[in-house]
Length: 445
Image 1 (tube, rainbow, N blue to C red):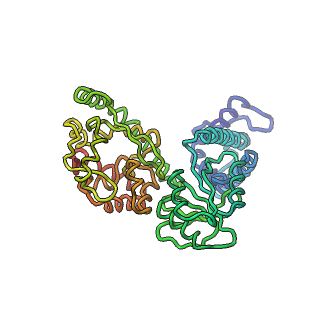
Image 2 (cartoon, rainbow, N blue to C red):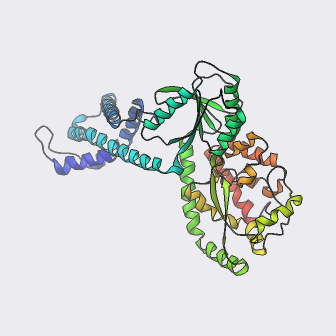
Image 3 (tube, one colour):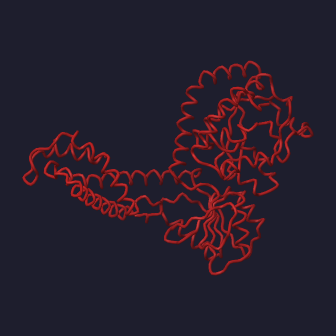
């Protein structure tokens, strides 16, 4: 659309009269309908050329060639529509369309160049890299390691290589946890063993994405999709949703509402900070390492609601733990201060986590992040699948009773139900149902 507008300006003001181009041109209002037709045709034809495919061969020249071909096909389709609908081409500026094609290629090329620069910059930031574990023979792992190293723009960082002939499944599980693995790439070669099946089951249970080279497995949770990665055919087994417009809307909503929420909460931040300082002194904020996406640790922020030595006192209260499993919760916890109890009842202590959402550590909706020592004590690796999505401020647990739920299995069930049922509108529904739950303090302790 920008290219069409720029082409119109050049045609009117830079080359108003050229010998092979007609002298006059109609007002821009006469061409407004092209701002609907051209992007629609453009997207279809660029999609035909594979421009939007994530694994398009990573050369800029190849991108420009495919873009030029897509624009040519788009122009051909446009003139075909002129013929079908009998649009008089004499009333249109031919020079405008002659200019539009190269300008659109240049602008799309500039967009791609900026995108590649941004991706390279992002790859340099270690925190944004995907943690990859390679599984196969030593030769296969080394091959993939070299391939990933020499391919520019990849956000994949190899954190380990495992040969199943010399590694057992517990060692594999330890590697997944220790390195906070996001992705496993497994090379089957020419054989299929029971260990390969166990690797698939482990990754499926923990919610870790795994790429293999053939559809040999039947899974109960993970769905498979065929893809092409760096010229190799792979089958992807994932228990979470792949990248989509719905996920883009979710991430956009996270950032938008986090910014708005932080700005609107400034008066509350001031009032709460003063109240906490006068009653408990500093620090105002409570910081704790929590398990984020795939167990990767991050620092969670909350308003402090307990006495300063609360974590030391926890061992003395262990016998009063109301929750089953590794999670610790106590009725009428004596460590909570009067101001802290009020903040907890209306979830005001959670407001600083909007900063975690803005940082990308959390989402507005997702399973609640647990402390590292609790996730380390999960008795079943399938419980770790709740960490296959970003943790959130609220989730099904929040609107289904919160602290009234004392069975850890029920908590896990609600988290996994959210992951398996997820769609953008489910997030919207949970956000709306969270409002009355927070305002009336339902289930809070």
